[in-house]
Every structure is written in C-alpha cells, then in structure tokens.
Length: 288
View (spheres, rainbow, N blue to C red):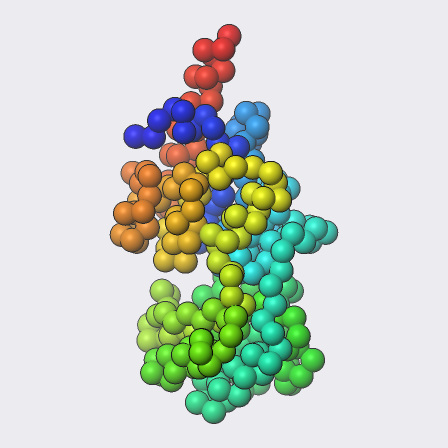
C-alpha cells in the first residue's frame, strides 16, 4: 500500500489516456470524473501525458475541466487545452522529414506527417487512417507533402514489411541521422502491422513531464503518473509516484509503486484517486 505521506504530498496527477484513463470504449469512468472534481478542493491538479495528437485529447480535457497544459504526441508538444499557450514544441528538422519520405517511397512503406492540427497523408498512403493507432486524430489527405515538411512533430512509417521498417528506423538513427529519436514496434491493435515513429531527440513522455512541472513550479515528488503501456516507461523512470492499472504490461507493473486491483475497464484510475482523497481528508480531519 502507498503511505499517506506520499499521497498527501501530491499536487499534480498526470494520466495516460488509452488503456489507462479511458476504457476500451473510449470513455472516462463516472467515478473518476467525480473524484477529479472533489480532489480540486484539496489543491490537486491534473493533466495528460498521451501519445495522441493534441486535437485528439481536448475533448477529454474538457470533460474533466482541465486547464493545465497537456503533454501530447509522447512529449513532442505541451500546450493548453485551448491551444492559447504553448509550453514546448519540438519539430523534426526538415531535412530529416524529407529523408524519411524518400526512404518510405523507396521501400513502398506508408508514411504520415503528424502536425499540431492533423495527420497528413498522400494519395499513395491512403491506408494510413486505417492502420495508425492514433485515436481521435484528424486525418487529412493531400496531393503531396510539399509545404508540410517544416512543422512536423512526428513522422510515422507503417506497413507489414517489418524488415524494411527496421531498416528505415536504423537509417533515421545515429550515426546516419543526428539528434533524432526513431523507434520500432508492432501494432497493439492491427495484426501484422509495424511502425517506426520518428521525432526530434530529447522527446518522450518523461521529458514532457519534467518540462511541465518546471513550468508549473511543482516538484517531481509532488507528482503522480498513471499508465499502462510501453510508451509510459519514460514517465515511470522519473521520480514521480508511479501507478499502473491492473491491465498494464508487466514491464510497467514492475516499475510501479502501486498496481491497482481494477483495470481500465473497471475504472482503475478511480481506485487510486479514492486513496488520494482519503489521505487528504484524513490529514484535514487531523488538523481540525
């Protein structure tokens, strides 16, 4: 169990979305919504750290009435829900965007360019909306990528040819590319589909959290993170209090300070929030 001391210190709780805060139908639990509202009375604030585009998380931020900046695209963008305040943005240098496009064309792979507003794909890459795990994102088909290569937050190369995608990933990594972070992984939702996600170096959910708390002037030990998937690892490598929902992959569960008994489909986040609320109430009662 978590100590009341660690729970009472919390001023910021940061949620992953898919598989954590959201159930498999894409909804936030009613109990969580109620607890978020109640915890605000104890000066606890909330934000997201998601692999989604910013435009694909604003609906959920509005449901929870969140006003702090949100960490999106795995840390490539930190921006307020309204978009009026940008804390951080990290664009892939244009020469590497063009390099990735050439490699994808050469090996007949699908490629998409993720911007603040939408995910762009060309006619040749028409299957992109169906094979990318980018829930809630707006997809826009374009005649070409001309004029779209300067403000790219993330490049996604996708397809069934895992060897070719690994090759692209390697060619977009050191020593062939500098200051770039390229990953390779298998789709969680689409059988036989593989991805390489390419971003500017120094971008991750964990780095995004560090930037967010610096902006908010909150210490890391006053922060909790809640996640379930491999891209939450960098969050769990920080000094924050680490919570894994019951459906989290074993790597994340092993890194967690606490694993909920309930899954995302059982509103596992609410289980943790209830613990925080109880600790805050007990402390308040003791003071009286």
